[in-house]
Image (tube, rainbow, N blue to C red; front, top):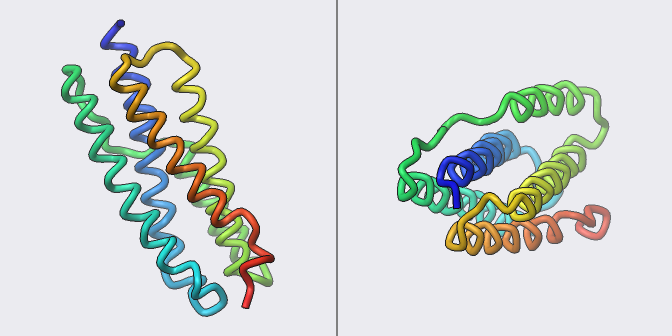
Length: 150
């Protein structure tokens, strides 16, 4: 197994996780009046993101790599687009949660691509697969927004 490829894939996932953390920071306090029942799930997702970041950072360092602690350019553009889009939305809370679902879907796709690439060592594959399951679970909680309205 090529450590360089593994480190590169893990750094891509770390960038996505950093995007996720930055995206969650934009959600805070925008939705809790309309969706108070989601607050604890949201807090768990934020905590989960930090744990995932630490796990990926450890895997990268164990393989002799340097963790890239930035987010992706695509993530920054997406967050800026969300800000513009939400400024015109009638249901800002619903639009914000819709963006959470979209971001989780993109992360799920990236994690699946990483697993399918064949570039991860067995230990990294196990961690990434576990994180993928966590992403899918959080995605499912936020996917059906209409069911969550008060």
